[in-house]
Length: 484
Image (cartoon, rainbow, N blue to C red; front, side, top):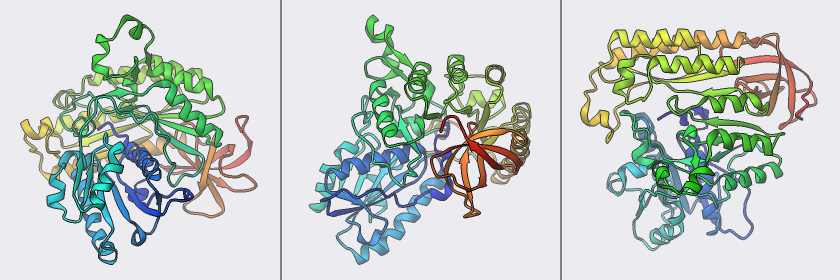
């Protein structure tokens, strides 16, 4: 669960995904995406596959021939949100009886054909590795038959599919580099819904980025459940690397090398990545980040708990001490780095001392951002099978609130460190609070707002930071940056 998903603005969850219309397409696709950036990128892959089958996206559900919802299974609340949304589709289907409804993604993979029984409105259930089969499945439902494909793949990376950029701002885009996860954290359902780790051919990654570069995109986020595990040796699962030929092993490309390739090939584009796992991150990656100005100085580095007892129970293959040593080395190599965390409050067996260990670790690191949740038992995980969810809800909520309160203090502390500095900001759009201000992000992934003046979306601008809140920097533009 090392949270790729939480980087997405929650207000964008479920927003109909739109793109340019392909001439000659007569059928309408309404697609919503919940959860992680990987889901958002998968929805772009789905739209590309269905565009070849005559579908254009629409923002009006009432005119849709096919309605798809891309789902998340990380927490119970995420699944309930999807179920509530499916109920709202009933109204649209009453007005358009020919409309077909499909469920994609992790929730589809977890529930499989059971979804058809539980949600009568659903005609189509498709797992994350089966999107190439969508044309056949759509034919099945159009013929009046239910359709299910939730077979996990050992090879599928969709490397040859050029995603349709949905609701794009024309500035930033996601590029998936790995699929699946081999880290069997006891609380996490992802290995069961997205399968084992496999990496994408680096040349296909470079070619997709080149396409984005030619369309004048300015920033790419490299995506994976665990990007630091990226390892291309000619194809196949990462766990089978040791079986590869000596030549394949000698010419393999790891994440640090891929990051170096991307930054070198496209020096005028900015690069981010998400998500990292502390046990897999190497200092080679940090040195590459220091080497290239166009690699953003921000790492989402989940730990989930500051307690060694909890880390062991979660099957996190590192200790608190090893994590803090990694943090220390990161700051030595890149002093301006911003870090964010994931924390789970109230995991099975968590004592008050375990909770205090988490707060203590937070005090030592002082993260810039945080993504914090009360533990939610997920069916099928080792924790659900073998551990008792024994922390009362009231205790979970109290501990979670203490974590949130402390993170808010640290977020303000880190934000204040930017005040008085001139920082490069990539303009992404208009501020939510004022039509007269631009918003963008600095290299550390902090939101910056400033008066619009004569600048435009996609410009790299130097901004003098004059004030801040715990979440936003405020300043005045002092000119274009050299990267513009």
